[in-house]
Image (cartoon, rainbow, N blue to C red; front, side, top):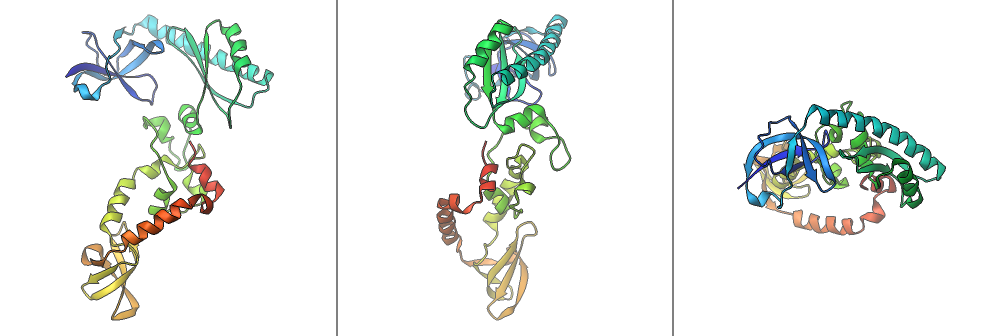
Length: 299
């Protein structure tokens, strides 16, 4: 077991472990820590705690001290400088006629480096821009290309549901989202309805996927042969959330009946056949999925 504290450097970001070095840190305290980028200012979101060794990556970097009022003034000054650097970089990008969209600027706490985050459709040759910026700021310059999902996380905004973006409020990291999730949840494949503000598939498709996976696993699939209280029949439709199956009975094929999935005992499981068909379709998916849906899955 090792004593650690958890520190977050952005409002919504990953939590990193640091060694407290004998300092008692409370949740909500701001601390100065040593990182790979240099000395940084962060917020303690987890106080001193013993953690199993297999859950941390050693060697742990150390906490230097609890942040002081002077440190807070440094942060405020950095934020002011970041706004100025953003405007300067915008002008430099225009001067060099680069096809890139500047998203944010970040100063490290010790001001040894300035990071410029941008998006672009492809690779950008920004070598001359870096030289130009270095001559202005007289410090190390780093330009970092990010994806549109990271852009939305940094800028924030409102989602199609009318609430603040999940990625900008509570999501620590992005989870993979696929078109199959929308299909299994019986959602419209209209890109306008399943894409978020960033133009990619909505992160919330992931939230209920485990529940849908469990329902799919415990519900007889369409075309399966089942035994019902009124005799054998074929499943022609299912309602995953209601937990019901519509069955065409062999003794009354013209009047399908609805039964609870618990009332339907599987006689012939056709899911293996369906899986083989699905795999064959997946192998040829690039030809069948419209281009506008392919774009939604890009990072």
